[in-house]
Length: 139
Ligand code: 5GP
Image (cartoon, rainbow, N blue to C red):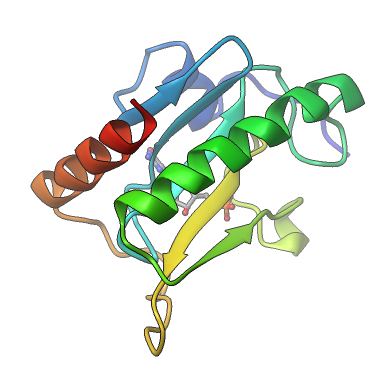
């Protein structure tokens, strides 16, 4: 497997070199809105530790990350008044991964509502409204 490349897009977001709609940050994790959301409120949670995916993250860093995934997931579920929550995580290109910094997708779900296809850019104002609701649920 290739080594972690810090110039990936999420590495740049973590360092503040690229903009993002942040909803949560602490010493171990950073969470922000996905710009091509497959569901309203689609949020990404990433570790601050440098790693490509689940296959190379250090166990201690994964142990620190998962409670943050749960914490942000609870807030996304509440803020979006969802009926359910789908957690997705892809590893390497053949596993569906596009950005090579570990990330967990939090996808709010509603009964009878399918996920949208990937690759559709969201309206920025709508994303900001959803981010604000999630921040409020985390406060
Ligand atoms: P994966 O690597 O798990 O297949 O998915 C990468 C995810 O990152 C996609 O859902 C995509 O919409 C999202 N994404 C790609 N580039 C950016 C970006 O610059 N900013 C944000 N917020 N999300 C991005």
